[in-house]
Length: 373
Image (spheres, rainbow, N blue to C red):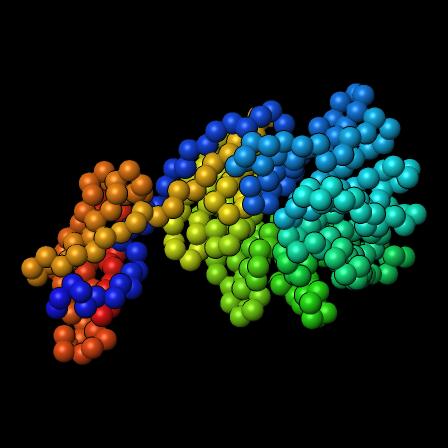
């Protein structure tokens, strides 16, 4: 078979090593509240003022979103160019927002009752909590939504911790029941697709499913089974991690990061790559956007950038196939190539034949790549 006849279809099972260590750098002393793309936002409070700051990690440009020495600012969140926060300029908790690109400020929710815990999606939608309600508003169209509500005269259930991605809003429903299995309160995860107006249940099994994250159609949460991810479109679930206690998951695309007793780890659930970002016992939370991972450690904020997979070159050499890569950008060892004999799984005369080559790597699971012509 001539090399020119090869159309590459690669399954990089052989180029995966468990627990890639990803180096981090310290950004500053403080606590980042949220990240979207290259931009982080955080709250800076002193005895005389408080302000919300934003910084683009790519350009190093920093700006003040809002500053006040008169009223309280709480918990900023960013999605795209939009930053939202809890604002006490009227004497009670309201939701305000600002577009970093245009400078336009929005009064999102100013009812004369406490509005809090605002979160933002990149398509200009803000979701937040009000007493006994989860609410949302599209700042482009002005449309408002009641995502969920309960009887305010009843003590249970509680609606807490909304999170948003695109038009998907997910929240926790604390039922007030004790699980009897793990000694914790039963917490359900529910949500709404704002585009369709349809409500849905992520998980409702009388167990504690608190601590979750959502991105696109994937929700990931901590539960007695470990760390579980669910595709809302297909309903398919997978256990991402079951090797011990875990908490505080965050997700971006196919990559999930979370806390364990020994630090911060992560996994790309599509490619199977695993990561170690920190071995510190002092990390309290972790955030992710794209390939950027931000976490706290003893009062400081740290940034780690997930390296891309190496660019591969595949060649035919006699009766062997050779896989080579740039060792300066590889998650494997320093050697730059591997080779193995062909193993045809169908007749070479078939025009769409798949060839597999088994590879055994030091300190890595046995895997294969495949070529399809």
